[in-house]
Structure formats: C-alpha cells, structure tokens
Image 1: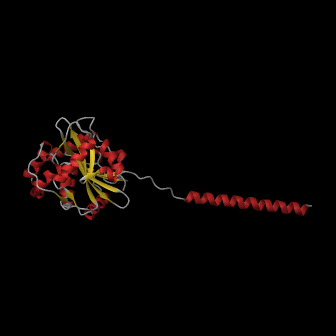
Image 2: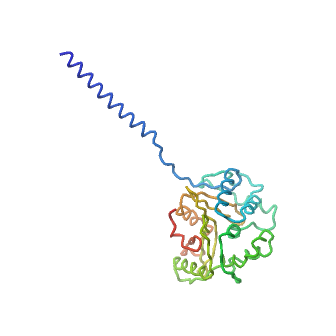
Image 3: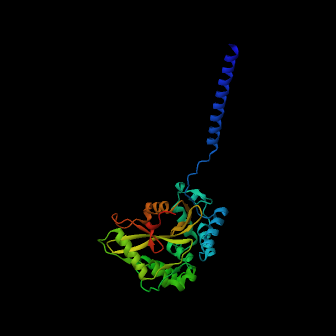
Length: 291
C-alpha cells in the first residue's frame, strides 16, 4: 500500500513542477518582450553639435540650397543666447518649449538695427534648387517689407535675382469674402497654377500656413517651413518669427505637424470664422496626412 501511495505522490510532484516551470518560462519571455517606444516630438535650436550635424546632413541630403549660409544666419541669431532664454542645444521634448521672447528680441536689437529674417525669406534661401515659377512684378502689402529687404539688404544679395519668383510664390491671392475656407484653399491652388509655381520632386517640400482676411478679400502666406522625409520621422525646419528663433522639430507624421501648426495663435486669421489652412508645395496638405 505504501509503494502505490509514494508513487502517486512523486507523479503529482513532477506534474506540479512541470506546470510551474512552464508558467515561469512564459512569464520570462513576456518580461523580455520589448514594447514599442512611444514617439516623442522633439526640437532643437541648433546650438548643440550633435543635433546640428544631424540636421545639416539631412538638409544637404535633401539637396537644399545655401545650407551653409542658412547655418550662418542661425549662428548670428543664436549668438549670446543661452538656455535661460529657452533655446535647446540638443533634441528636447517639444512640450517643454518655453522661449523668453522679450530677452531673445532684446539680444538681437543690441547688435542689429534691422529685424532678423522671417520664415518666408529663410525658406526661399533653401529652396533655390527646388522651386520654379513665372516672374511676377506686382505685389500686395503682405510681402511689401520682404521685397524692400530683398532689394536693399546685403544679406539677401544672393536672392535678389529671383525677386520676381519670390513674388509669384508668396504674394497674396484674391478670394471672395463669402466663401468657405475650403473654397479659399482651392482658389489659392488655382492661382499658384496660373503663376506656374512648380516644385521638383525631392525629399523636401514647402509647408505654407495660409491665413485669410475676408474684409480685404485676400489669402496670404503667414508662415512657411521646409519638411524633409527621414526614414523614421519627419524633420520640419522653420524660422518662428523675425525676433524669434530658428527651430527644427522631429514629427512622427504629417497629422502631428498639422496639429502643431494650426494650434499656434501666431497664425490665426483675422476672423475666427476663417481658420488658417495648410498647403504642401502647391497641393492640398490633407492629401498627405500619412507618411
């Protein structure tokens, strides 16, 4: 009687041991499985060497023009500015961005009589290899200051021969005040086609934030930046404003870039009923929401 009982106990022990061993191995495998990291939207102001080198390489790989001169503009603006003004040397979480705009503007004014460049002029410098448009002579108030600088400021001497193309690209478009934003968007695209605004196919594209003024019946480029497609993310290069920093941001996709741009109060239209819209090159931005 004792042997069968002992044998039964041994069999039960072996079964329990096997069961526990199997469960533990499964748990170990589960613990070792790496969960996909959540994408973090990060930015830099190109003061740090590592981020700076990465961005310069991406710009040159995308065949952007005058990259070295653009970096000189960045260095000139950043001179004397430290992290206490909110500038980021390395890649930094975009949610932590907090520029000290008054300190940044005061730093520029100490050494310069003129305002720094704006987003449109910065973009135009980099797009010389990618852009083609018919010459346009007349222009509206929205780019009047830009044209004055292109004509008389030595900083823009390289761009001066292409002033007429600049006008074709950035001059305002006449719209009807009673039309919807979608209608204004279609009108803008049609006008660009009339001006023969063409972008060569490349890794880089122009992103334009278009605001409308129903009272004046115009739509205009309130802000512009350059988007470069990288293998695992999108790189967006911009000048935030005349007295605001140059900024480069990594976005996961076009939808997150659109959300960021349209949430900014800087580019609100003159009427709350007519929110701004985005264009990518000379096409609707909505056509390319996914990477």
